Length: 174
Image (cartoon, rainbow, N blue to C red; front, side):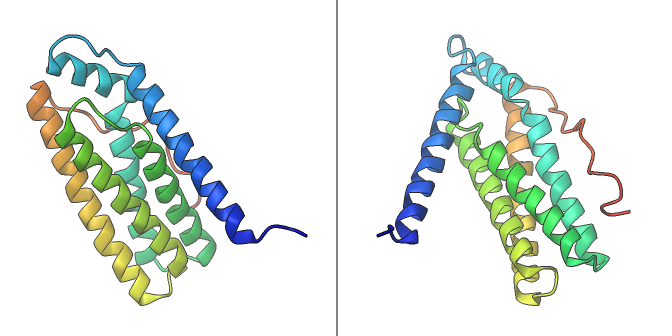
């Protein structure tokens, strides 16, 4: 007799949670824990490519908006929304930071972006209620991530670039 599928879902979820925790441990573990709080934060920011992570999530959110505004096909909507979801999850895996307030802002922003990607994906671009919910989540995510950038800039005394080196696959939105 086989086990109920729900049990496998719980096991899979537990494995994912442990994986994220291990990833976060190694991400933070690779940074400099000595020195001033500013030095620790600078080391973490550099080690995790924070600017690129935030830039990628915000760029993904912008591509979602374009796809929805242009009423792209369901496959395109699924692709751009899935990329937002995946990149938000990946960026969240870089947490915690050496600064609690920054960790909270980033965690909230990434979680909202993840939720926006999931709701957008589930909408297929046609479910107006989910499209509207995803838009609200993207707006809130961008606000949290902007607050996080402002905090990093204040704490480090410099402006963190959010330019990414990756581009969306050619033709998805073209």
